[in-house]
Image (cartoon, rainbow over all chains, first blue to last red; front, side):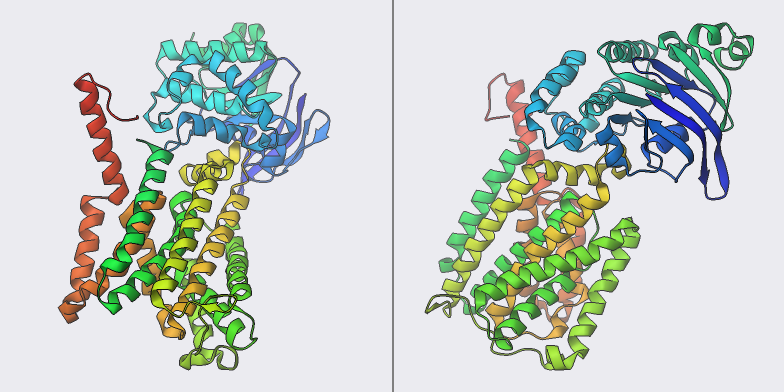
Length: 235
Length: 326
């Protein structure tokens, strides 16, 4: 579904990504794990066309999307839940969801259906729908960010550190909802520092180190891998 | 009361008060100031869209105002077109300026944008002053006609006032509809977090350019009315100080609130005139009043009202009775 072929990305003169190649097949959850500054977010931002103009090839469903404008990429069916949630604090929960629907605003008849779907997934958002986004708890904001991403009805959902800054119990809840989203037919590319959590729910994983992919494989294999265990799982 | 409901109720109250105010004011001078206030109301609605909703600090209002005023003045006096086509053209002309000025926002953000717009305002003023063959230079433009319906001309100041007030009310309804639309939400989203808006597929540059154009369309109408009210314009009015005054109107009323911006516009049109008796002290006192509001009531007048209503509602809930609509 998504394929990166030898992608390089730069910030000024600094090369952040070195020849990244990865693949996400339809229906999968694939995780990208690695330490701070390894290039995980840059990889996602390159796919979304938000930062820099990446070199190499990024293909989505066979179509070249490298360096295209973000609204166009979203309209093709990729949606991103950015790091740190980045919900709109002074918009209500409903307005935040409206914004997620914005790229599909010419299909208003589908709005209710999509709203139903995210409210079924996150009932708390329905209760809080008239509250300002900024007044939600961290976990609720993460749910809102996920819900906002889903409102674009993506085929592929990119998640950037959804567990960041959440209490362990909430992390579990968010991970469960990601599995549920995937079961409903959305392919997921998950970026995480919380490697154990990420590998537990993923089918496959890639390990990113200083801008290059060092290990790749089935999630179970990675969890058993001695190097991964010592570097990322702390065992 | 929250959000759009509070806004709609406030707008109705404000326009009703403005409609009643005219006969209550005795002095001819203050009747004139009231008409100016309504014209400022129309223009501040434009700034509300770009600054209040979309969060772009636009410091070039005097530029838009000047261009709009001159478009109407020159088209009516030199080309001999009627008031109505001239008003339409001044709105469209300033809207086009919004597009031209909006394009730099492709690259500029925050303070850099405000500095650029300051430059835009100043350049406009110098062009109006020095391009004498077209603009009449420092002498300005005379004999600008008043609006008319067929052979009926609004020479009477009271008629002109109610005419402007009706236009302002129509524009307030349009601004409210825009605010409640998908685009209104997108404006606010770009204000709240531009990067997030980009990441979820909103073309934030396009949204900002659109906000600039809409601002221009509103300001063009107010500016055209301004020329027509005064029947004489000259370039020295359109100063940076005026641009600051418009920004202050939005801040004092409560940033992001349409009725707030309107109340701010009325207040800041009257305040300087009412402080005139202080003579050379007037700017200092005026500055202190503005500073006081910004420090002690940073959410502005509408923010204070919202806070008061929220507190009353909470207090009423504690007492276990329903109070008003939440």
